[in-house]
Length: 248
Image (cartoon, rainbow, N blue to C red; front, top):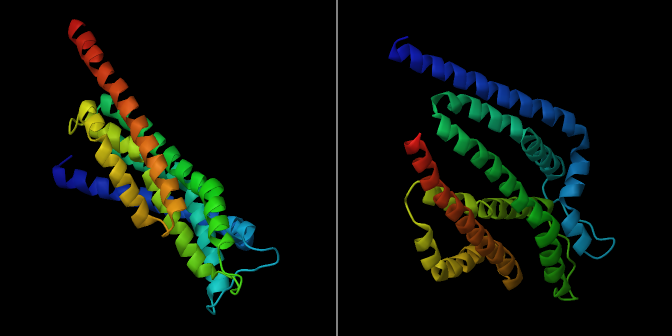
């Protein structure tokens, strides 16, 4: 097969896999659509739990009561379909990888996915409960707290992304060491700068309160240390593997 034909065949395969991914997401979304309102109630549960009993959220836009639950259902569909989506990506790139690359990348993709969802779960089940309760506990008695659902949606998605990406720190650390950009000793040496950087990042991506900033900065540091430990284990294993292969 000539090079142009090979390139076209890859494009056709990519198109087919993208279509499959889109179809699966749409099918799941259609199945979830009748429960879009229930999904939003679940999505809003951390906020509602922090508000005074009987308080409801507001929808100031004309179409907002419809669009926001639909967006939540779509995000839920993508989250449910994610294992299949990642499989399609893996099936597309795997034929071009060496065996040792496949052995390294597949666990890395699985671990990064689990870490992302762990960050989202940590934010939903722990951070929101503490932060919302703290914020509204110090609200003046002269105001009525009734958050807008669109603002709440944007805020929550931003926080989910912030914590999900933050929980990828061990993957970044392992990749940097594995690819030879930095050593484990250097990572330990720059630890004071990472501590400062963690709090700066937390201050930028979280609400302007100390509590939520600390609750993001501390996991960053814990995950950074975890990444160093795993990277050190991998670094020790590589010489052993190379020596074993040379002896063989």
